[in-house]
Image (cartoon, rainbow, N blue to C red):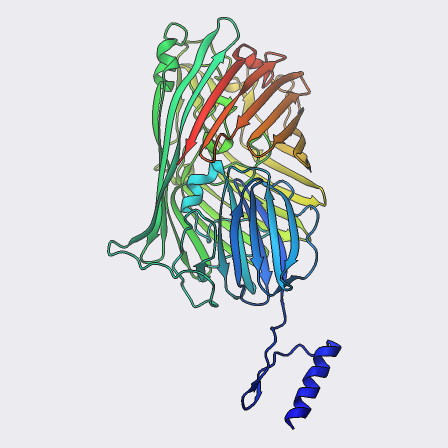
Amino acid sequence: MLSGCRAVLLACAALGTCALPLAAVAGDTVAVTQAAPASAGIRVGREAGRTRMVVDLNAAPQFDLFELSGPDRIVIDLKNTQLAEPPAPGLFAATPVAALRTGVREGRTLRLVLDLADGDLRHESFVLGPDANGGHRLVLDIYSREQSVARAAAPPLEHQSRATAPLAAADAVRPASSVSRPQRRELPQKAAAPLPAASPQAAPATGVSDLLVGGYGELAAAYNTAQPEHWSKLRARLELGVSGSLDWGARFKVVGRLEGDAAYSVEDDFYPLAVRRDQRHDASLREAYLDFGAGDWEYRLGRQHVVWGEMVGLFLADVVSARDTREFFLEEFETMRIPQWAVRAERFAGDAHLELLWVPYPSYDRIGEPGADFYPFPVAPGTPVTERKPGRSKVANHGLGGRFSYLLSGWDLSGFYYQSTDVAPTLYQTALGLELRHDRIQQFGGTFSKDFLDFVFKGEAVYTRGRSYVSLDPDAPNGLRESDGLDYVLGVMLPLGDWRFDAQVYGRHLADYDAALLSDRDETGITLLVNRRFGDRVEAEVLYLTGLNRSDWSLQPRLSWNVTQEWRLQFGADLFGGSEIGLFGQYDTSDRVFIELRRWF
């Protein structure tokens, strides 16, 4: 009988029709073969500052993950695994991953090699066990340098792209075999499949664990070349954040910023006193929030960034964030955003994502004072302008809205509604003088993006009700006319090797147009961005923006050198021209050259 069993098993193996593992057959005779290889599929999601790769598997993964340099790569070896289908050519378009290479090692080990276009990145990995949202998942998050502080505090339950599997509050998360840098560890909330990783450390008696500290320091200088020439920035900035886990399952994060600008002391004969007082020094609480889950919902309470859209050089669907525009829109968006005190609830279900938002204590744009280089209104330096901010104790002045997004046949679609007091001020002409007010507005909008092999097609649109615009009609109340408006932008991103090209068309249509309005019924413009990497450390970029109605423009060349993984040196210029009543032309006398040195820690 034993001989018959052996004969049957050998015949099955020879014909390739038997995939059952061999166990002990009889007595002291044991034959063992490998289990059938696991099947793997790869998905990629994107959001501001983060790229998420999810490897879906039909079995618990056994893997090694490590870094290689020269050039910079992330390597994942998945044992006894094979790809269900080859990855799409444009899978990592518009991400810091230049290419994905796959291969097979030692017969059944699937190797994934992610070639990084930028060596100045951070990443972390974790594994999710099967649940209602999917099977076993290996998740790799890749963060840009500007998100280094946020990364330190971001749990796997945080806001994520719809292209990735949703992470429920009860997902079991264990640290994976990972990179040489310290990895965040999450305490598991339910049992998961055994993983080749260390066990989470017990929380200390204080009730706080996984304490992480990070941030950056920066020195920046800018010199205005228009007459009279002058220093417009001699700034030192320190941003420091701390994050950690609480023993009851929540996470917290606190980030603060201190900065001082000596240009407003050196150039005290150029800038009015109000400008010098406003921009000489500053201290701000950038973030202070608590994350926790309850049932199928995830909550974030406190001062936080809420990013609902991001296009190159433009804020459109990003309707919740306030901004510091005292340097126009020249700083990195992550740096110039002003967070909101908010209560946010999110629920993920398959490819759907629902987000509800309440902003009880709104923040508003900081635009500076008349006489500053980028003051947005045509007001003479030294002219008194008061700002009337809505009372935050009135519920009618709070922000309230929601956003729903869905992944449909590769289309990443979202729609939102938000009512608030406008974060951007409107200049009123009153009997008592000039006054900045924040009108109550309603905004309906949506975003989309879709990968088409080698390029990404994306767009945003926002319809706003209740906003007023400057009118030349002497009978216009407070020098303004109210009109509904539609803002939109369509863009294409095309990566070609070390090159990246972005082209966008943007515009605004006023529904209740009046010939006395300072703007046209339809305003349009274009943006063009060309980015080129030279090896692992040097990156050159040119951004061109122009308004077609008045032929005003802005040209912003940049050169960045990542001296090491911690240090970055950047220099460039910000140039403006065209009609003085154009968005860019009004700053024709604010041309400048700059240099910045940043150190992350």
